[in-house]
Image (cartoon, rainbow, N blue to C red; front, side, top):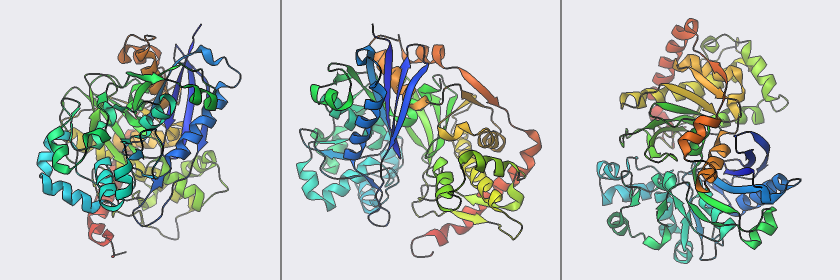
Amino acid sequence: MEKYLLGIDTGTSAVKAALFDFEGNLIKDTLCSYETYYPAPHCAEQDPEDWWKAVCSAVKEITAGINAADIAALGTDGQGWAAAAVDESGNTLCRTPIWTDTRSKAECEYIKSVKTESEWFEICKNPVQPGYSLPKLLYYKNHMPEVFSKARYILQSNSFIGMRLTGKASQDVSQGYAYHFFNMKTGKWDESSMKELGIPSYLLPEPVSCHSIIGKVTAGAAELTGLCEGTPVTAGGLDAACAALGVGAVKPGMTQEQSGQAGGMSICTGQCESDSGLIMGFHTVPGLWLVQGGTTGGAGALRWLRSNICPELTYAQMDELAREVNPGCDGLVFLPYLAGERSPLWNPDAKGVFYGMTFAHTRAHIIRSVMEGVAFSLRHNLETAEKAGAGVNVMRAAGGSSVSRLWTQIKADVTGKTIEVPVENSATVYGAAILAGVGTGVFEDEASAAERTVKTGRVHKPDSETESIYNSRYKTYIELYHRLETMMKEGCV
């Protein structure tokens, strides 16, 4: 008898696959990493073939030792703003620019010449920025015409994996926000805007709900992965949207705090309204949207620090060092803009900065300042969202850095928000697994599944004693960026 659901997450640094029972208990999980390529300034690429190889390796490990016939269905999720160009058979035509790639500034200017920014915002509720998929698609057209002419589909990360598993191309509604001709109210492509931009409609499949069954695992995919031929596969969704589902953020005001490679938050809302400084997309839960803040400096900032400054330390040891430092890092402030910055600054030229360093500061101060800088970027996004009317009443953490009790407490103290951490630290893949369960009738719907199965493990309440310290450092954080913004422009540093 079928008894498991499988989730597959194609993240920024690795594929994670996880197997759950129908009560949401994690049975088995694994991780398989891949490379990001940086061929030129402002370029960040990944090879979709690397994604697929990682999926095959990860799922083979998951299916080893179990009866694959016990897997009722699988769901996929992935990083946003990809542009995986494939032919009719799903063969990859080139590496895809990922969400940190900002080479397509000229294409953004062209998009804004076709319609004003406010006109595009009225359609899609998102700013015109080079990280999105639309400028990348136009970059193919302008600079890689052989790819553009051969492309049958342009796919997001999860839909690329879905096509490799089933042979069927798909596009889920939660990833639709990558294109500025996606109508955020209707969940459909605005075909007249596509024509104005010269985008053939055949390149993008029609958007479907995230729990829709797009096909079944083919014989070839079954051989490569260890799955059973015929296993249903759902469309899945954006990693942040699946993470929001996976932590149980399924009602307006409930918020997922993103603690993965990137930072930020996703606030559930029942209204299709946002701020031009933020990101907006469909939730995986029908009838809801997500007002999102997406930053480049999440857990990736600490990973960068460990790789380059203290590779001999474990993350637990870094935590212990940081714990010895006073809140506010004795005046040391970090701007976590190591790959430019997304919301709410939208500045691809933004740079990472350590400010206020003296002989009195130690490696422990540097570690804690990175943690605090990421927390300040979260607060910046939360404040922007709240000014736009997206209130936060419950915040739940998802992602690797939520394991750190210290870092999670720092975020609670900096933002003044209580943060709940679920028992299982697999929210993103669990969200994808829930979608598979809804699509095959294991669960009645997304919200009831999450409410029944997601359990809170620990709670971090803000410490009032640190409030004045963090308020002061936050003011410095904001002013630092504004004073340095001009210098951060290309050619000035």
